[in-house]
Length: 186
Length: 124
Figure 1 (cartoon, chains in turn red, green):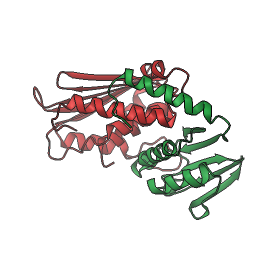
Figure 2 (tube, each protein chain N blue to C red):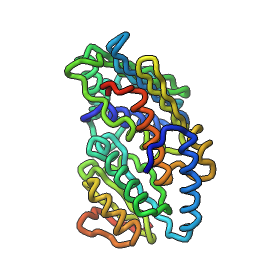
Figure 3 (tube, rainbow over the protein chains, first blue to last red):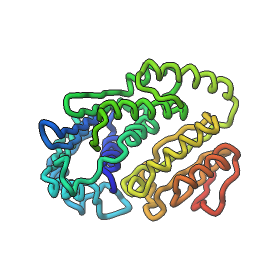
């Protein structure tokens, strides 16, 4: 993947396919107190046993029936480790899964965060039946929005209506700009 | 579109959308399935879907349901989108954002299939 936001979308889709009804994406970016970029995805999907968790970073593990090599998670872990970061997956059958990746923010090899707004928008566009919470922390500032917040605003108008989605996109972009406060993150 | 930075401002948009929905409720219902598996995402599925949403908005066509189709087992053809309209499922392969815009304009809205990009077609 050419940007972390696409990896994030891929992991979010894993949560959807694990039957999650609630998914929380926490994205953290710090440059001042520490040099850190990390994200954590918590879902209440069907979870996995320890053997499956242990095999996730093995490139020959995939749930796909049409391909034999899954490269998403193992490659991302390798990239994180190259950037003085790491990866962790915790899961409990019947409870859910938590996936975390972190990087040194200023590391020269760190993939760009990329278009996180589009990734979040996709969740509201195609999975509006899932409670999706997006929290973005930059230094000591926090932005948070959830499917429930948006559904309260739009009531009987579906949030995956194209006009509404473009409004949500504008809302996300403006808040990201405020969060960054004119500085270069991402 | 004006910049929106609060939920309060989003609320205004709701009334606008509500109006155009009721004005156009007689249109044919179309369903678009986009695959969002790893291969699709790496191949640009997110940008394809964004182009679809943008084109639908520009053309003020709202009687569409966009759903995620998972990986369709057509990795070599990703990004793949399926248009369900007039009783047929039409599958387009190797879709790029500009193609997606044309598929919306011609097929989704006007029912004209773009045959040269079709990789499968089945009765629903």
